[in-house]
Amino acid sequence: MLLWVWIAVVVVALIILIAAAVPLLGRLGALRRAAGKLQARQTQALTLQQKVEALQERVEAVSAQVSRQ
Image (cartoon, rainbow, N blue to C red):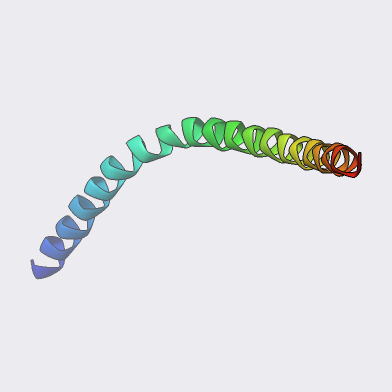
């Protein structure tokens, strides 16, 4: 008799665990898409950072030329 109680407790616990996990598994697709968008943004940010650094070097070079004259 006690064995059946333990089996029932385990089954109920598994049902609760599955019920909690199903919505989380449904959100994985959205999280994957968001992660992809963030990686694309990071790539864009790195590209912009390189362009800003190149522009800053050009500004410094022009500023140095102007100060010499």
